[in-house]
Image 1: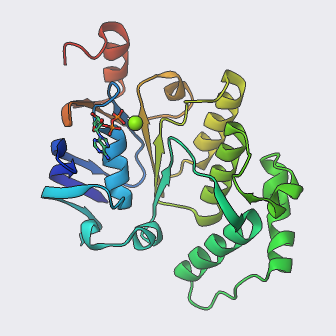
Image 2: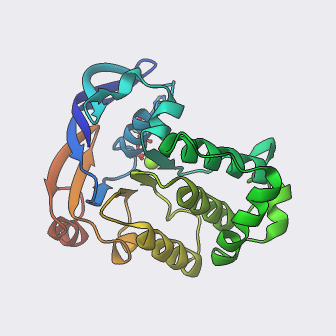
Length: 246
Ligand SMILES: Nc1ncnc2c1ncn2[C@@H]1O[C@H](COP(=O)(O)OP(=O)(O)O)[C@@H](O)[C@H]1O
Ligand SMILES: [Mg+2]
């Protein structure tokens, strides 16, 4: 379980989060709604350990362990996965090596006596996953995300999720930059990843993704605070009345 309590966060001189309290339980899906600039991306970056944000008060923990003390890779091994609003391109890192590395690390994390897959074995292993997601095999030889389309980058992210099986999947505005067909496919793939073992946390200011992924709980953010929480009915309320009177 992830617990966030009275969390205040700043970047440089700017106070962004002003006392956020919320929990994410495995097995439940969540939606974090709010207009632009309400602090949604800041919260997701802080959960993943982005160094540009400073925690000034409050706490955040995973299974009782202090998240603030953990490096981003430890957070990843603890089960947190952040799907970026803007997916970075990384030159000189070959896609196949990147995927093989994260797969081996997470398999070892789950079972100590796992034997790492060699480049040859990994390429054999990954084939069916590539086919399932309709990713061309030749992409494995390319640099990570470099010159990939928004749609291809998202599919690579989903492949990462499949390889490491995260417990908390944070999706930050993944609806931006995809056409409707691509978006529907991505949303359907993500819904198929949802299980009683994990928790999908959708961050958005649109609602379309909620037609595909079922959420149990909704939090509404405004100016760095959670101003309302409730069930899925809250989505209908906001669709009708907007965020203004929250
Ligand atoms: N690194 C930063 N430095 C200064 N201000 C920032 C930084 N990151 C975010 N902010 C500010 O914090 C507020 C919340 O931003 P953000 O978390 O991106 O909101 P959202 O994802 O809800 O659109 C905005 O006013 C933004 O300008
Ligand atoms: Mg954002």
